[in-house]
Image 1 (cartoon, helix red, strand yellow):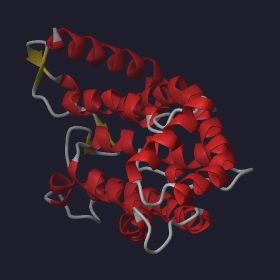
Image 2: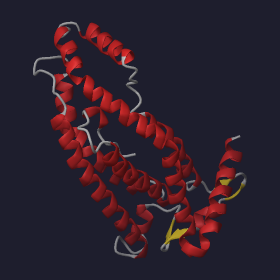
Image 3: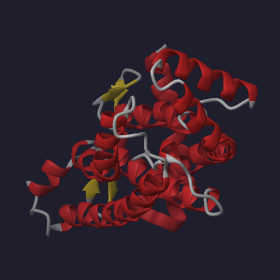
Image 4: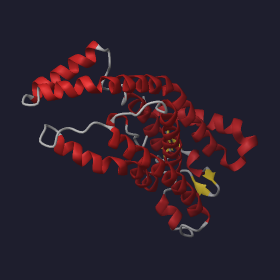
Length: 254
């Protein structure tokens, strides 16, 4: 079952690449991966908009949540129940912000598998021979370093991806710091204060974890990650431009 599914996906990528061949020539398959990623993000965009609406609603509820935290400070279980009831009353799902990322993960894993497997559907995987500016889509950073180093033809592709990721991560870092600073912090001796303090220090750095992902996965999957991460940064900057999101809306790597 899975074998036929991956074979069908490989056929789809090949067909898209054939359509893009006149424009992108030898990099048509790489362009097909980027186009596929954009299509995935367009498909989940309505959920992203819904998540933004939910986050704005949670921001408006922040004063009432703060009151509940203060009222039930000595009973964390009762406090959580009261907060959940408030969210249910206002028809706000605490998971809405996670859905866009969760639903696109299968697309990433399919791309990863397709460009990590020597055989697809019982036949040799011809997609592994496709390249982006001379760098195989099935290759990884260590392979590029072994063929001329980071300044070589293949390494230059990764350098470009690293520059894009670093730029997006820096943008997310500044945005995350502002969001964490704007989010109401629990009392120093209140429940969750220690965890919140640790999260405040670590969360702004999470965007840079994408650099590690790009360094490890096949180039095709790296293209997916870079494209979706850039999309996420732009999308959230637009969707949350007229509000100050709370900590729960912190930008994720995907």
